[in-house]
Image (cartoon, rainbow, N blue to C red; front, side, top):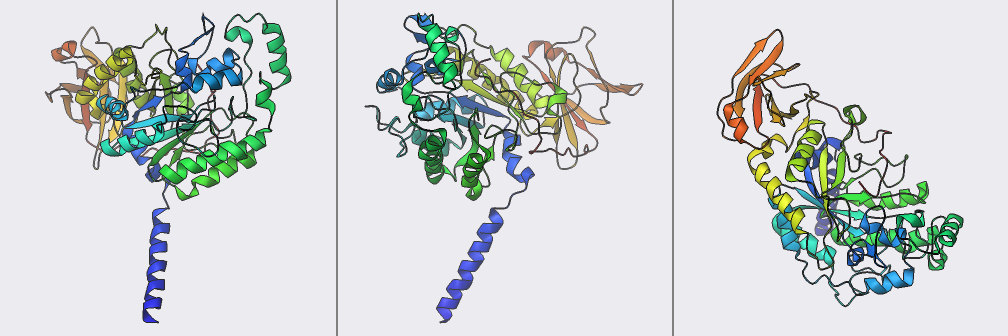
Length: 477
C-alpha cells in the first residue's frame, strides 16, 4: 500500500514538473532565436533535376522550385522524373558544417515543398524519397542526426496547403507564359482559370479537406512524433485554401512542443505565429517596429537549384544585409539550393566561407543583439544589452571623408574599441552629439566594427508575437 501511494505521489510530482517545463514566456521561447540571428534555409527536392529548364526552355519567371507549376508539367510526368531522384553525393554533416563555419546557428530544411514530394519516409503518401525512389535514404533523418552531432538547431519548412502531386492540394494559378512557350497555352490558361490553378485532372480527384486530412496533417504528425523534441522552428508557407478550423488542427499538434517557434504563414490573419517573414528584402524600419521578424533571402535568384544561375550575391552584400537586418532587430535566413546530386553550388559555398571569415572576427556585433533605433548613412548601429550596461556596435560600410562618425542619441560612452583587435578608439562629445574618430586601421578591414560600451543599460524593448502585421509571400526575389 505504501509503495502504491509513493508511486502515485511520485507520478504526480513528475507530471507537475513536466507541466512547469512546458510553460514558457514568449521572451523565453524566443531567446535562442534572438541570440542566433543568422540561419541557413535549404530548398531541395526533385525539382533540382530540372535545374529550371523544361523542354529545352529556361523557365521564364520565378524560383526553379516552381517549375512543375509554371511549366504545367503533368503529374504523371513529374512523378516519373521524381522517381529517378538519387542525390548520392549528399552529405548531411558537410551541409551542417558549411552552415556552422559561415556563422549560422540554425537550419530550416524543406521537408515537403509545393510539389508534394516528401524528403522523409511517410505513411501518408508514397510520394517520398524513401518509398518512391531507388535512392531510398531519409534525408530529413540524416540531417537531424547531423544537427545533433554538431550542435546545430534544426527547423522544418512544410507546405501545408499547396501540393501539386497529391490529389486535392491547393495549386496557385500562374499563366503559361511564366513557364515555357507551350503551343497549347490558351487552352491551359483557360483550364487553370476554371479549376483554381490546377492544370491536371489528377489534381482534382480529391477535395482540399481530404488532402489536408489524408496527407498534410498526418505528415506533420509524423514529423513531430519523430523529431518534435529536436525541432526549433516550423516554417509554414502559402496558406491559400486552408481554413481556420484546419489551421487550428495543425496548431493543436504543437501543444506538446512549446519550444517550437512558428512563423506567420499557417493561416492569415488569424494565426499570426511567433514572428513575421518579409521575403527577399530588408523591410523599412517602420514596418517591423515592436515585432520579432526574419528576412528569408536567396544567395542567388532562385530558391531551388538553377542550372543557369548568374546572379549570385557577394559576401559583401550578405554581410551588409545581415548587419542592416540586425540593426533593425531581425534575423537573416539565407537560402541555398543544392543540385540534383546533393551538392551546394560552388559560388554559394565560396560566399558563405567569406561571410564566416568575417563573422569569426565580428560576430559579437550580430549575435544576441537588438534594434538600436539609430540608422546612419555610413553603416549600421546595432545594440546589445549586458547585465549592467548596453553596447552599440558601429558597422562601417563607408568611411567618412573627415574620419569622424557623428551620432545622435547615444548615451555616455565608457569605452570604445575596434572590435577586430581591441585597440582603443577616440570618442568625444560636442553639442550633444557623440563623435567617434575612425582609426586608420579601419581602411584595411572589410566592414570594420567599432564597439561602444555605454555607461548604463538602455531601457528594455517590448516585442510582440501576435501583431496584425504580415508581409506578402513571394516565390522569387
